[in-house]
Length: 127
Image 1 (tube, rainbow, N blue to C red):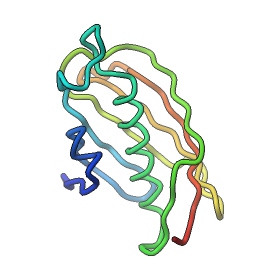
Image 2 (image 1 turned 180 degrees about the vertical axis):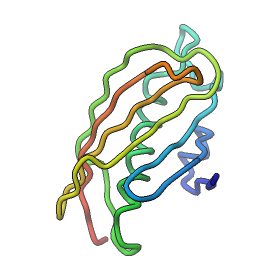
Image 3 (image 1 turned 135 degrees about the horizontal axis):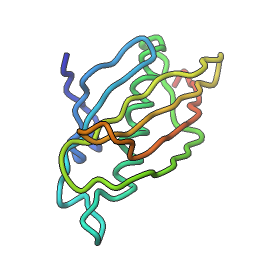
């Protein structure tokens, strides 16, 4: 089930939400020339944003509608470059505590090659 993103930054990156719920999310972003580094590969910042967005969507899927969360800590390890096609991010909750949600995400290309591995801690807030 495709779900349209509503955040302006997600729209800027061309992110589409493919699946979300039960502490998991699968999203994608197309290769766009405007998101590349000088070598023609997708900029690491765009890949990090894709991973962070996937983790935020997955984390939020575990919370009540009036409860929010934000990224408190984020780490990414790049494995390969993306020079074309669709880039996918799959995220899931590793551990959900009362105020902290521990997350992980894998970013891949269309061939399933791992481009990056990320993990994060999200802070839960009632604001």
